[in-house]
Length: 290
Image (cartoon, rainbow, N blue to C red):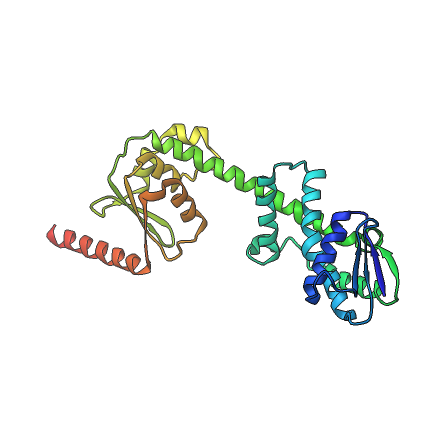
């Protein structure tokens, strides 16, 4: 028999419900008892599988309580009270934990804390004991809770960077909205370097691009605006940008798409070869004509 005492009435109820679900029992089963007035869940041994109970307890910690702890850290240590902000940061945390953000995952060391939780659960259930869930957390899971704090810290930094990026994008959209287009269609070739072509597929030389740049743009956004690509594009403000690339998910290309939105048309690798061949033929024809 095991008896788990909770400080929180809600935690006791949630563990009880989770245990019933894991063991596929209904609330009338007498092998698992919930004493609501004392916040106790008691597990009898008649039919209840010992390993299944331990597994359910482990899952309760890492699946149900972990979200509680993340929210508590956000509120109590970083003062994020807005549920929407909390949710956005939580999404970043889980995208890191699920391996979707490799650049952030490297910041989280694989320190085997979850294996330690399994060991702690195994140890606490070895004897037929009564124990306090909150004492279990305090004395056995403190390193795990510290690890969760590090996850939150990394996610908050990323969240703030994303917020700054969105503000930057919106500022440049506002700048673009007030400009008269200097060109209807611009061809932009992403290969080993970025090359600009006008509507007649004539290459726009670097010196000409520099002369087109609106100096107010660089003065107001000296750090964020790339003078080789973003600044000329914003200054020309073309109605349509045909962008030829091998990798449409490249960060700079994503930024251009975010700023210019529906003005950008992405061309595939086939389009990249095509434009090179077309330009070569045009140049050859012009030389022969001369």
